[in-house]
Length: 199
Image 1 (tube, rainbow, N blue to C red):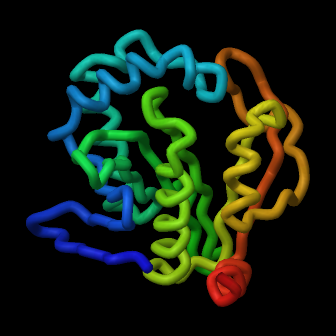
Image 2 (image 1 turned 135 degrees about the vertical axis):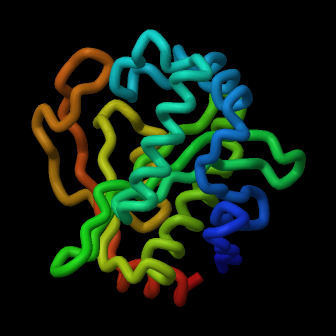
């Protein structure tokens, strides 16, 4: 189960699992973030919007962290970086975005893994941690995700974590310079509870 540490005045929020820890995006890890994203560019670019010319610079990371801080304050975004417990190294990122309250109680999850850390189970654990955080701590009813049909590793990950395919969004996101169709996934709080009860 998630171990939640939250102190808005001194420390960033932290979600800890057996192998990874999710920490709120902060400026102190800029050089590590830039290095990992640079090494992973060819691996990540086919699945992401086009990168700006300054994205892999200190200015780019500052803008990234400021965007996350603004979203955190507004309550519309919960952005985390994923760190390996064994050595504290950065492995990727995961975000709850488009957080809606009221009649929706919904968010969207997105994630990325650095090329050095794929197929090691880090993202599966990170996704599990953020689902528990979203449903238990935030009280969400539904968490959505999407991925391109060709992204089979991401599809498998979502299905293994209990998401269901609900349809297909045509020209859903502008990815790597093109409008791309996406499979649309969702998991409900009750799905997560039932899944945990059967484990």
